[in-house]
Image 1 (cartoon, one colour):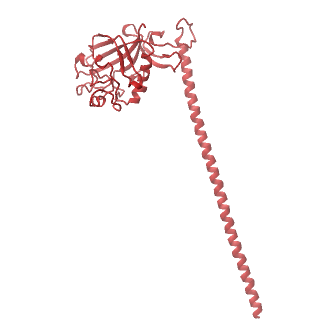
Image 2 (image 1 turned 90 degrees about the vertical axis):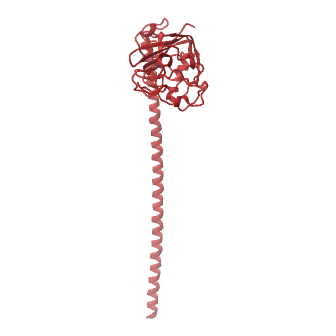
Image 3 (image 1 turned 60 degrees about the vertical axis):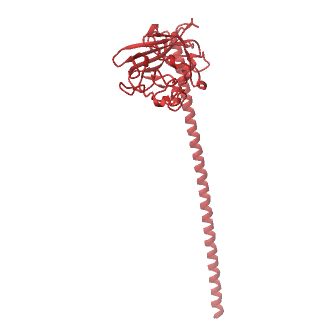
Length: 307
């Protein structure tokens, strides 16, 4: 009897051992299966992320291509509208005007010009065809204060505003134009009472960014506004974040503008737009009516002269 009981005990012990072994093996299998599934999920997630990145890059590339195509089509349209230039025929003509004097239309408005004859991309300008026979490229226009002109160096470099409103064309473009030939300058001003005046200079050119867009050329003055610009000859352009003036203070920051300051200014046409304000910290052409006489409208523009 005792032997039978021992035999049964050993059988139960053996069975228990086998059951434990099976449970351990099953747990191991379950753990391995989970790890395998997790690895598969990670791989799938990485594949999805890579696909999304490629899709984003593709979308960006398509957008870039569309933008470039739009510019090319616009150039072709403007080339067609330019018509016969320099002996060409009406209809399609890829030759764009070099300046506002070459534009067929004698009505003031925006036109695409090609200053570099295809070396660089053409760009739009506003042509004034009213003042003294027309042909003027406007590079500064203010008349209602809708656009803030207290801007950074990069913004004055590239330009801002819209050509059918208030704007600054851009120092890079202004340099490119004035070094493509000989240009004269006209400055038109008007105060809040409606009185108008103008200043003309027989030459005008500015340097490139390496020269801080310095006012390199300014010819003989003529006009009705008195000469408030010759003082700035050889002055470097300054903005609130670029102090290139000759004064110990920061003229652009002190007088709230951006200009060819020296130490500091006789004119400040890119200052705050307001009828009343602290002397010299508003739009002024000082020799016309003083440093506290605010201007309501200003327009600066250039025209090619006979070389």
